[in-house]
Image 1 (cartoon, rainbow, N blue to C red):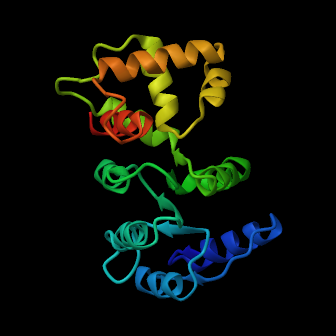
Image 2: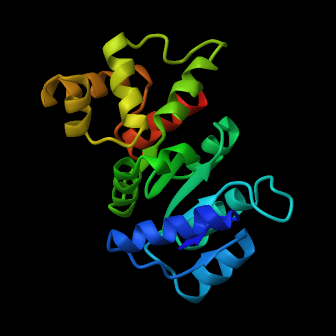
Length: 211
């Protein structure tokens, strides 16, 4: 299902997804209509703009958060015109599974956009690289990640984009065992115990985004 108030972009996404073999159950222009559609027939995944009528502030984000709370098996991909740190943290604060945050410009990179949809549908996450980069740049206070080596920080940055260990290895041109070693070191340095009942990967990403 799609929620986007720009008719041109909405219809373009409908056509793109249909051409790629996806079934679009509903395409609406505001968050309220999206919630009604999801309640009537929950889809596998929703794509929603953050800013929609009537106030064009955070209607889409609030709809996305409600969907994640009421229908946790529905994947949610949020689109934003700009990097909005607080929105990214709010979206991921409860659970970094079946969720994505992409800049609208990324939709034009069709393969990357479709890959994000598949990753979210499979239970993973997809966070725009530019979002991650700007979150790092904005970190000006005491950095809880300061103890990480450059390689460990790079591995964590790739993890924050939703990549698997194999994809991280390919991206950084290192072995899979090296990725596992770096991430285990990250978990230890961030004091993420194994027996908390939560995924250490998810907790590490949240610590990264909040830093």
